[in-house]
Structures are given as structure tokens and as C-alpha cells.
Image 1 (cartoon, one colour):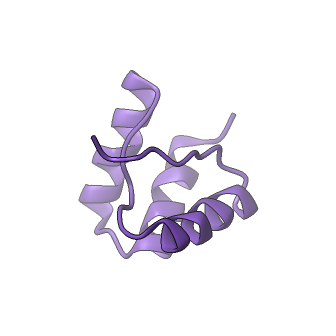
Image 2 (cartoon, one colour; image 1 turned 90 degrees about the vertical axis):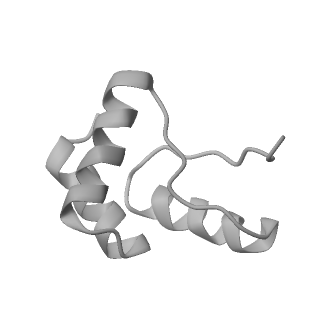
Length: 65
């Protein structure tokens, strides 16, 4: 489990979200269990997942439908 402020901070640092955007994404994760924080080519997303894991966050890839 991670502190909510830490999760928002990671989103800001890794993906350049504003404090408001990062907080909204963190709240979505908190309430719904997931949020899309990055999208793009598979190789790029694998790197983003690795960065989230390195920060101690749980992350997975999901293909767009």
C-alpha cells in the first residue's frame, strides 16, 4: 500500500502531470482500483510500467480496444 500523496507525486514526476491531474488520477486509482496514466506504443508503455514498478507502484499493460 502506498500513501496517496506519494502516488500523486510519482505521477507528476514520471509523466509530467500537474498536481491537480495527478491527484485526480490517484483518486481514480483509490476509488476504482485503476487508472490510465500513460498510453502509446507497447515498447514505451513497457518502460513506463517498469518505472512505476521501480517507484513501488503496481502497474500493468492493457491493450486499447
